[in-house]
Amino acid sequence: MQVIRTIIWVLILVALLVFAIYNWTPVSVKIWEGLILETKLPALVIVSFLLGFVPMWLLHQGTKWRLERRIGGLENTMRSASAALAAPAAHSEPATGDSPEDTPDTTTPQNEAQ
Image 1 (cartoon, rainbow, N blue to C red):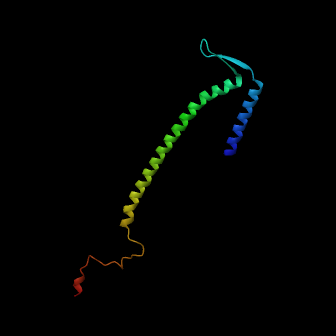
Image 2: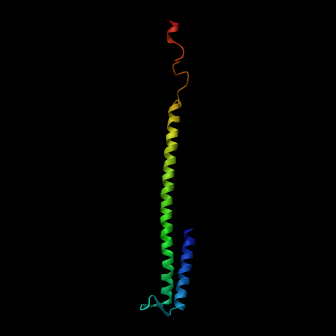
Image 3: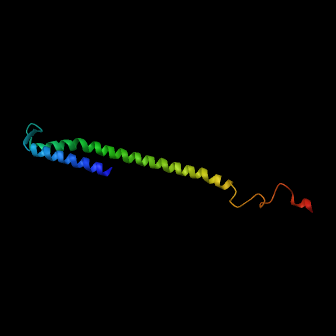
């Protein structure tokens, strides 16, 4: 999967480089009435892309982090709940190696034979 991601990023960068080479022309951007920005077209395209991409990427990362924390908390709760349920069941079962013949019978009185 890492190889495919690397190939895609290389193709995107090559396409951006080809675009920049063939469109290296100055552009005037009128920001306000008295403020005009002179820049090259590839720089304008890259900055515009980043202005749209970065906030959405940050939102995605924040949501992913929050959900991973939530899932981790739920998994820990499930682990502790299953451990709490398994603990009483382990105490109620006889230990290995104990057989019913080895344990004394408490239902019959011991003094009857005397």
